[in-house]
Image: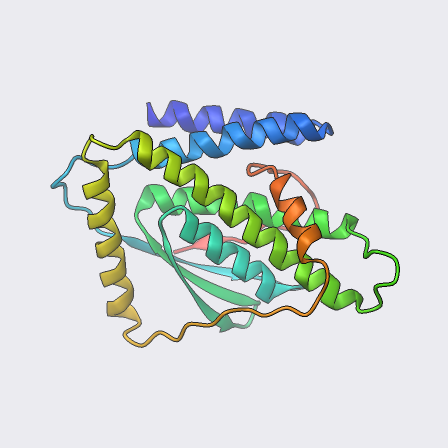
Length: 230
């Protein structure tokens, strides 16, 4: 059943990739995100089953490496993984993502897709007349896009969890969150939290683009997708 769900998601993503119609793309987005959230619930093991969280390091190249790393981080967080921004490495910004196998799989599929779409959307974005701080506009556009995508993904995950209420899924989810938190604490006992700031005027435009995002777009040739590697 889980494999059939993933196959349906992939077919929806392929349809979304082929259309230029915004309304069709929004429909495919909603369907793909809902199915992806359902897959996350269906993949849960029975209560009491012991599993061990895994982890992957994502290296995101420039340009806009920090902003793209933030997208990877928030997408992972939305699908019940725990991301940590490690900072710059030799090839770009690095994000260490902890989670269970099915959630890591979902994070990889969604983050790769959304990074490509974000790059394509930014290339099409034009600052309003009178805006002279173009780089600040673009950065704030990226932050707006990311925050809106995170909100949409989180809403889909919440709906899927609510629909599974009474099946024991909530207890399993709580146990898995605790397991992931323990794995992170064992690897990184001291964590410093940070919140990005923006002075640009593109946040609202980026958020609007995020609302139109095709959560499964797979083939925008703006740049090579990042590799999630163990």
